[in-house]
Length: 262
Length: 334
Image 1 (cartoon, one colour):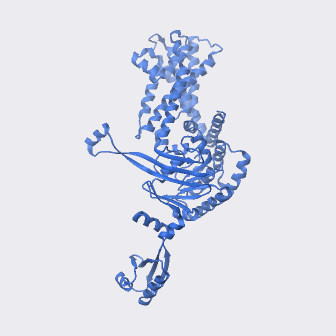
Image 2: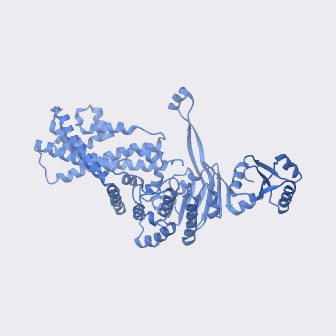
Image 3: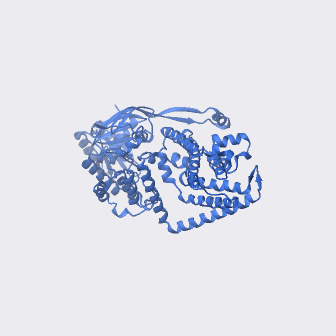
C-alpha cells in the first residue's frame, strides 16, 4: 500500500517534469484551459437562465447540481483517461509492457495516462457551486467539506468503475467497440435531477449505470433536500462497490489478454 | 534449480474466419465460424541457471507466444510453467521483479522524458537501493556506452541508441533471468557487436540466464551454445548448436568464376562420375558446386575444373547456419 502511494507520487513528479519540459506549451495549455472553463461557466448560466422551475427544482438548484457534478467528473477525467484503452493497449499491444512491471496493471495505466490539467474543471465546478449556493443562501457547516470530499471521491469512483468495466469489454471482444461516446452521453443525465425522468431511466441511473450518484444525489444533500437522504449516503458505497466490481472484472479480463502480434 | 521449467505447455487461439459476400456477412453476425489454432503445441523444455539459449523459428512459429507466457503476459491454455520457482501469470507482480524483458519492437522507456528519468522511475518501481543501483548501473552504462545519451529524451534517440538504453533499463534490478525478443532487429553491425559483448559479459559476471529469440542467426552463433527450434508450435530441435552444424553442415560449396564462357552442361559432364550439384547465378556468372565435405572430393573437383577452363576466382564456403536451418525447415529433421 505504501509502495503504491509512493509510486503515485513518483509518477506525478515525473508527469510534472514532462509538462515543464515544454514550457511554452504548458502556459498556452493552462491559459486555454482557463478560457474554456470560463466559457463553460457563462454557458451554464445562459442555458439554465431559461429554465425557471423544473419539477420542483429552481434554477439555482439545477446550477448547483451541475456545479457539483463538475468536481467528481474532473477527478475522474484526470485519473481515468482510458477512452483509448482498446486502441492503445489492446490493439497496439502496449499492455505487454504494462504486464512486465511489478505494479497492478490498472494502476499503472491510471498513472501513465493521468491528465492533471483536467482538475481545473473542478475549479469551475466550485465557482459554480459557490455562485448558486450564495444565491440560495446555503450555509456551510463544519463537516460539509469532509462530506463533500467523501461524495466527490465516491462519485469519481462510480464513474471510474463504469468506465473501467466498459474498457474491460476489449478483453472479451476482439473488435474495437464504440461504446465509450454513448456512455459519455448517458453519463450526462446524472447532471440533472433524476425525478424529471421516467421511472425506468431513474432506475437505470441509480442502480445499473449509477451516474445519479455523481451529480444529483450528493448535491441534494447540500441543497437540504431531505427526501433524498437515503440515496445521498449511499454515494461512497456505490462508488466502492462499482469500483471493486470493475477491478475484479479487470483482473479476469487480463487473464484473457491475447497480446498483439509483432 | 532450473531457471525455466516448461511441461506440456499449450496455448490456443480462436481464429475467426469470415464468410464471403453480403449474405455471409449477415450470417457472421449470428454465428461466427472459428477454428481453434494451437500457437504453442504441448512443448516441454527446461533451462538451467546461467545458460544462454537461442529460441528460433519462422514467423508465426510460436516464439513470441512462448516468451509471453514465460513472462506472465499471456495465460497458457494448459500445461505447467515454473520460472524462477514461480508461476508467472499467477504471481505476476512478484514474479516480474525477477526477470528483465526487452522486446525489440516495443519500447519499455517513457517516450517524453530523459533516459535517466526513466531509469530513476524504474529504479523506484523495482525498489532498487541507491548503493545497488550505483554499483551495478555505473558499470552497465559504461559498457553500453550510453553516458552521453542519459539526458536526452527517448524520442530523440536513434534506434541503436534506444536499444542500448532499453537493455540497460531491463537490467536495473539486475534480474537473474533475461528475455530478449529480437533485441538486434534493425541495428547496425557495430551496435550488434556491442550488445552481444555486453550480454556475454553479464552472463559471465552474474550468471544471468538469457533466453533470446532472433531472426539474425549470427546473434545466436555468437552467444548461444544451445538452440531450441520451433516449427508450427512444436519443438523440432533442442540441443547444442554445434551438433546441429555437425549433423547438417556436412557439405561445402565451391564457387567458381571463369575467364571464358562456360555453360552448366559442360560442367555437369566434367564431373559426371562424382556426386556434384552445379548451380549457376546468371547475373554474375557465378558457378557453384555443392558437394559432400570430403577433402579428397573437393580437390578432385577443383583440379578437374581448373584443368578444363581458365578461372578467375575460386572460393570454398562451408554451409552457413542460416542454410542449415533453411534446410531443416524445408525438408524436415531426420
